[in-house]
Image 1 (cartoon, rainbow, N blue to C red):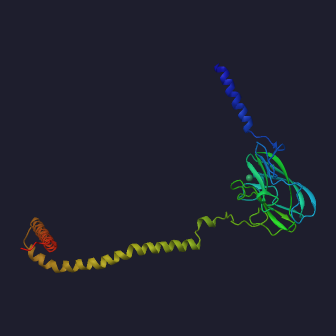
Image 2 (cartoon, rainbow, N blue to C red; image 1 turned 60 degrees about the vertical axis):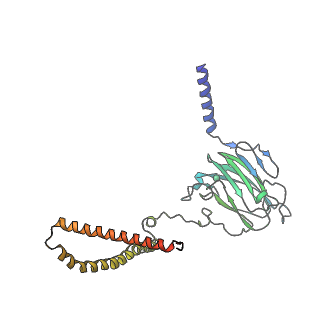
Image 3 (cartoon, protein in one colour; image 1 turned 90 degrees about the vertical axis):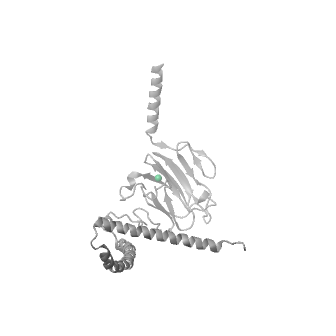
Length: 294
Ligand SMILES: [Cu+2]
């Protein structure tokens, strides 16, 4: 029984390890969900597939083209600081072209080829989308609109576009270049690997630090100065006035006698204060108390 169990467990482990080592998969038997949405249970998906309906302004299909686009980590090697990329960053087609894209994922992760801004009456959410999880291929077709426009092509998996998986597709003359297309247009946020930047603070940072320092110095020193000038002067004056009197008083007395005398004075002083408080309370009570007429 124990032997049988161990064989079963080993078989399970072996089969899962075979499954986890992903092999290239052609996603070509997809289930059609309607509206150009097709998918399988292995991470293959097409959205916005359109092989027939002409976009507004297209009298006929102007041309039929087929391209293959790879997605993978290795295509980002030529772009410093990027992690993922397509093997091409720019595409250009004549308006009303029927375009078939064969999308190949060369990585062990999930990648997409997404186009945005297409006419919504024809493409749900204005989107054409191909997706493959792990190494594999998938194909989809769309008919490009009639107007000159530049479309964003990207992978929408978190951070994949920011890390380089971004391209542009121009229909006709296009409508300019999109920002941060690796190798095509300037990055919106430039990477800077020069040594001077992390070591030396910028002039603005330095000015800010100096300002903070000055502010802190003011807060700490100014009130102290005021305290010293006010209280200290009063103390000095009192001390100067009392010293001759005290010298006279303590002449010929020993140190313990002086201490005893000081405590006696303090004791008298406390008693005096207590008496004054008592008298004040009495005064206050007699004034607030409503006494009946005799
Ligand atoms: Cu991706």
